[in-house]
Image (cartoon, rainbow, N blue to C red; front, side, top):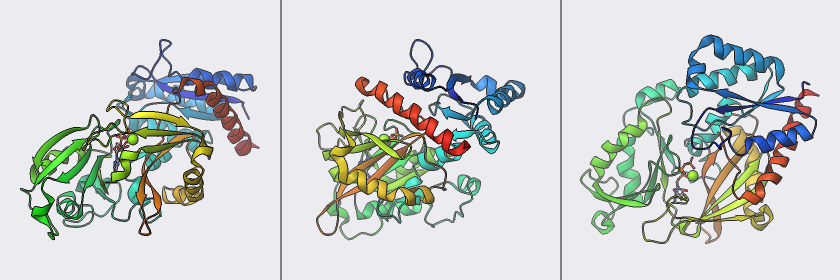
Length: 371
Ligand SMILES: Nc1ncnc2c1ncn2[C@@H]1O[C@H](COP(=O)(O)OP(=O)(O)OP(=O)(O)O)[C@@H](O)[C@H]1O
Ligand SMILES: [Mg+2]
């Protein structure tokens, strides 16, 4: 054991404080040092990633000096994310503990984690993921015109059955997440596939703004979400009880540390739980949500195996929305998992305590793995 932990950060980006670091990085390192480990930040930039010798220098250095890395790079802060993931993948193959492994970040964090979990009790079975043929081929999925991954074929049918939410993969804070409803449902009662000229109302989660469109025109607009690597759209039933709030469990490896209750702004179309859109946040202890937390922890082994069997991410979140089951009882539905760079700077009073818990968890994982 080297008793040394490397934190990877990207240079720049709105998540940085005056010292150039994410505000939660230094507190974690300070606690590691108090506990007898050493820790340092190693920065990546797109220039470094494109420069073979600089990139290799970092790789060799971390391989030699660190027991583990903690990835604190926000998606979007590195354009060359693929090259960054390649470095992480090589380090993991060489025995450096990945917190998390890059493929765990992809597996847990991508929106199609929902379709991988749809045969569990966490996600409605009629949740679909759409890809374009090129992306399907890249990720090893067999795409057929008219098949289950074909957006244009399926969406007019799923929407005919009721309100939907379409989620793009790359968005954050609600960008490209659309609530879609038929403007005049009575006009299409009993129809199993909507015509392309059906009038729809589309609300974007980023700010709850509403656009009235024709179905065909809106689907053409959404094609852009399918383009390129990791392009996809997830099509999920709209859960009206989002009005009561989205409930986020903040996880430290396998333990819940706090729960955030996010209540969307008032208004008929408003459905977004993002701060920018006007949602109100409340921070609770996991014990205040014991039923949900217990349900989630019971499902963890299955989640892990369905998402590729990687070790759990170090800091991650699972978001839930209430639904009602066939017996009229409350049921929690999983809406999203985030794991590439979950921050814990707010609320400020939790920062220090959380940093201490993270440092302890890192050391436990290293000791368990390396002993
Ligand atoms: N099935 C659903 N029914 C009702 N509301 C939903 C549903 N899915 C998502 N929402 C609402 O839309 C918001 C944004 O969706 P989601 O969390 O999936 O994407 P995101 O927040 O853009 O992604 P990220 O959290 O990675 O930035 C949620 O916070 C929630 O308020
Ligand atoms: Mg979200």
